[in-house]
Image 1 (tube, rainbow, N blue to C red):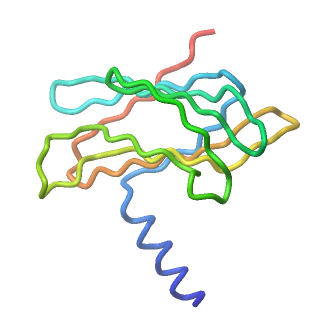
Image 2 (tube, rainbow, N blue to C red):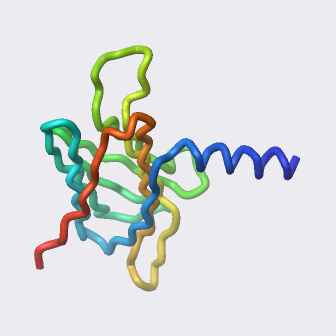
Length: 132
């Protein structure tokens, strides 16, 4: 059983091109420039509330704005954001998987992992600096 779990974790890890660890305070926004072909789009997210073990996350990408409540160790622990959808059924579109990992109540910080799935190596990312 442990071998299956370990093997599954290794396979899962290899599906993603990159992963990033991100820590945000309440209402601190993270912006990422997503580039492919001649297009540039901004993915932005922040969290606004942590209550009843749920973290309220606001995110936007390509004129779409959404709000999700994420929970630790739950099926609602992550958000999937498709970065490029060409409508081709034979092709897996690149996407982000934003996973809520931890909440530190003393520091009032939420920790995330952001995974990039991009098997065709089309996406270029640039983390933008926050303006104070």
